[in-house]
Length: 72
Image 1 (cartoon, rainbow, N blue to C red):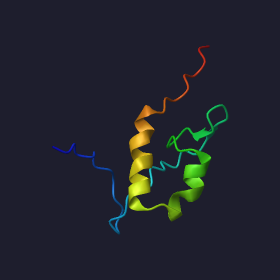
Image 2 (image 1 turned 135 degrees about the vertical axis):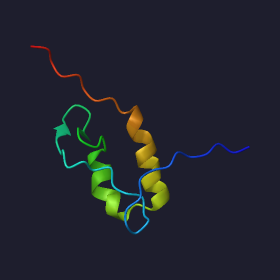
Image 3 (image 1 turned 30 degrees about the vertical axis):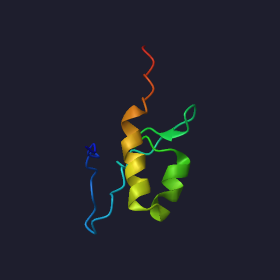
């Protein structure tokens, strides 16, 4: 029995949609965008990635913890 791959959002053309949330800010330590959690390489390559590669990026995002803001 094969495990089902979780569904990822699709755009109007049916391709895997970008996870961009228009909250672009780089975490210097991790080199990830704080809005979408993608790496700079993933962001730069997104338009050239296949749907299989895009889906792999989406599936990796939940495991990327965001930094905890400092307490005042």
